[in-house]
Length: 221
Image (cartoon, rainbow, N blue to C red):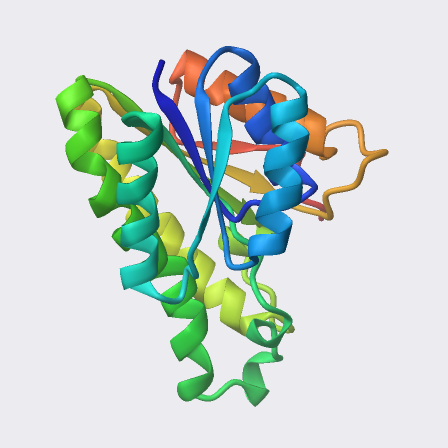
């Protein structure tokens, strides 16, 4: 079986998605900055009978991200599914008039250089398999910029453009690239935006391979 690689492993959406893909037999590579968190998540998945391993990397450090993905593929098997969904830092979300050019360096590195690095790391393996899925998860500011969250609005829009171009370029190679927009907060009690509901939606996107952008729920007016 092939590997599901998750960049941005955490106890909410990340764990739920890892559990969903692991339940159908994929090995799971969890990638995060925090080794202690990876140990806890790996233990939970292992307790569910899922083969999982954690790999430490920072989305802002291309070398560490590439190294983690290559090691994951070498250790667990070829990466068929990549999910890029790390949580943006709070300091990315300044009001637009308080946001300088330098303030955009980290958000753009996080949402553009990180995805480009990750895709280049896994694409040769997907091509060798003859198939693959790349899943991007973004907040509503990716499609509707928010003046109080300038960094993520600019960076998510750029990530969306990159993902859309990938969708078109890789479709002939049976590699499906898709984006799931989550307009509001991810909450355990939310009907459509709970971790489990979103995990099911992401698995459905992978399985059905239908279109580029989907919404967890409609954007608020």
